[in-house]
Image (cartoon, rainbow over all chains, first blue to last red):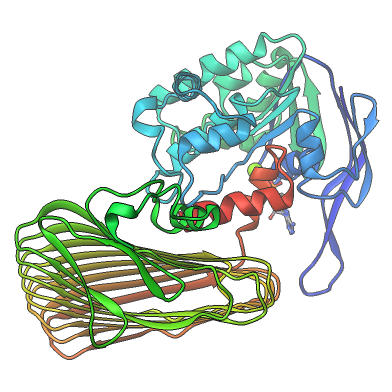
Length: 247
Length: 316
Ligand SMILES: Nc1ncnc2c1ncn2[C@@H]1O[C@H](COP(=O)(O)OP(=O)(O)O)[C@@H](O)[C@H]1O
Ligand SMILES: [Mg+2]
C-alpha cells in the first residue's frame, strides 16, 4: 500500500557549508492492514519521514507510491483526501476552536455529541469536561496530545501515522491508549504506523522498523527486532525503550 | 413613525431587516425599549417602564435613561443607512442609574450601492451609576456594491462610578472602508471595565483605534483585548493607552494576524502615576501559525479553507 523508493531529504546548512541528509536513500514498503512501529534514536529522522509521507515536507529525491499511485508531488490536502493522516509529535493549539469543532473538522462533518465523546474516551479523556473547551493554552501538553490522537480516530483513514503518541501521557491514559491501538491493530485493510519508544506499543506491532541516521537500520517481526533493541542497538535501546511515562 | 403603525415585516425592507439581524440580532420587533434610526432619521422608538428613550432637541440623537435598580432589561438602538450619500453625526447619551443591570445592543450597518460616500459618526457617552452593570454590544458592518465608501467613526466615552462594571464587545468584521474609533473610559473606585475589540479589514480598508482608559479610583481594574486580522492591502493602527492613577490593575492585550500586503501597527502605551498601579501590556503581530494551517490541511481542507477556520476562531 505504501512504498518509499530511494527517498532522500536533504537540507542546506545554515552557514552555507554544504548540506545535511536527514533522510538518505531510504527504501521501505508497508503492506495493507499492517500495524508497524517505527523506533530509533532521537534525531534519527522518524518525524521527518512521517512528514514526507503526509506531504508536509518535500523529498529532495526519490518517490512515494501509495496504492499504486505516485503521490510524491501531491499536496497535503490531496493526500488527506486519499485517506492518509498524521498525528503530530507536537500538535498546535487553536485559539477559539472547541474540542468538538476540531473533531468535527477532522471528520469533515458535524459530529454528534455522543460520537465525539466516544473518540475522547478512547484516548482517556473524560469527554463531557472537554467537548466545549477551547484547544488553546488552557489545556496541558498531554491533553492537547490526546485530542490530537482523537482527531485521527474521528477520520476514516487508510493510513494513520501517530508520532510518539505516548509523550506526556499519564499511566492510566496510556493503558487506555494501548487498548485503543490494539483494536486498531485488528483492522485488516487499514494500515497504522506508530512512531514510539514504548515497549507496550511495540508489543502490538506486526513489524518493527528501526530508523537511525536517516536510514532503515533494521526491520522485521517484533519477536526478532524487539530483543535486539535492548542488546545490539546498544545505548539508545536503554535510553528510549523504557523511557518513563510523561516524557 | 408611531410605534402603533410599526410592523417589523412591512415597515422595513428586506435589506433593512437583513442589516438589523446582522448588527443587532433583531429578527422581529424586540422586547423592551428600542430605537431604530434609518437614513439619518429616527424611524421608530419605544420606551419601557424602566427605560426611557428620548429624542434630543438640540442635536441629532437620543438620551437613554435607565432607572436605578432596573434588572435584566435589554435596549436595542441600531442604526442603518441604505441610501447612498447619507452623512451624519449622532449623539447618544446613556444614563444608567445606580444598581441597574442592563444589556445595550447598538450597531451600525451601511448598505451603499451608490457612488457617494455614506458615513455614520456615532458619539456615545455612558454615565454608569454606582454599582451598575452594563453589557454593551456594538457590531459594525458595511455592504452593497457601489463605489461610494462606507465610513464609520465611533467615539465612545464611558464614565464609571464607584463599584460599577462595564463590558464592551465591539466588532467590525466586514465591509467598512474607513474607520476611526475613539474610546475613552474613566473609572471610579472599584470600577471594572472589560473591553473586547475585534476587527477584520480587507481590500484597501483603513482602521485606526485610539483608546484611553484612565484608572482613577482605588481598586479599579481594566482588561482590554484587541484581536484583529488584516488582509489584502488594508491598514490598521492601534493606540491603546492604560493610565493607572491609583492602586489599580490594568491588562492590555493586542493580537493581530497579518496576511497578504496588509500593514498593522500596534503602538501601545501604559502609564502609572501611583506606586500601587499595576499595568501590563502584551502585543503580538504575526502570520497565521503554519502548524495550524498544516494540521487543518491534513484533515483534507484547502489552504484557503484552513485560513478561514483559523480566522473565525481567532475573532470569535
Ligand atoms: N527542515 C529541517 N531543517 C533542518 N534540520 C532539520 C529539518 N527537519 C529535521 N531536521 C533535523 O533532522 C534531524 C531528524 O529530525 P526528526 O525527524 O525530528 O527526528 P526524530 O523524529 O527521529 O527524533 C534532527 O536533527 C532535526 O533537527
Ligand atoms: Mg520525532
